[in-house]
Image 1: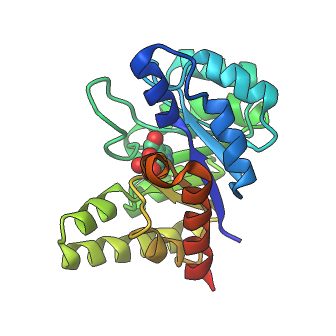
Image 2: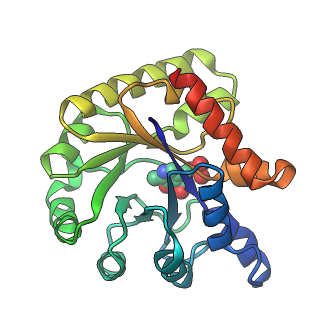
Length: 244
Ligand code: PXP
């Protein structure tokens, strides 16, 4: 079955807008579990613009679902991950000025650094995932340096769909399909995420090599209108329908 990881970063974004304790990301994580999520994802950014260190402490102490900690490849984040030893660590590129994670990691261009960075995390028992584009060179480099998982960036596919550029969207989906097949053939577990919505999730969920999708912003946005439980259940239903 295709797993759904619910990213709760933007529950924290809303909380931080007022500096109040509400809404509580841990409560959102528990509700996501009730609604059928298989895991919780949280991105501890260098600038702590959404998830805080305290959120990670609370999630690690109280969450029963596996936590996927997204983070940049920095010594500070490595130390935090080694202290908590979450189920999974997803390494993402991070630029202070970006609104969200804009592209994938350049694993091919930083293979020595990343190999050294992920080794202690792997030794500590974390499943290490690398957030990359679908380029074969990046996928091959991820396998070569010993990652367990690659998460393919679906942001461009989703943006092209939103912009109505359907021919380019379909070409992007084809490239994701080929990337997923290559990664799977190389023995990597394949995840995907970024920008997925009710409209875009189906064709991605249908890619047979995928084991997990990580979805956040749209679910939190939709929950303003229908509630988090309902938004997650509808996403789960669409994922299952695509696999049926
Ligand atoms: N996967 C990764 C690696 C991400 O960095 C993000 C965004 O934090 C997501 C998935 C989820 O993206 P979105 O919030 O657009 O659903």
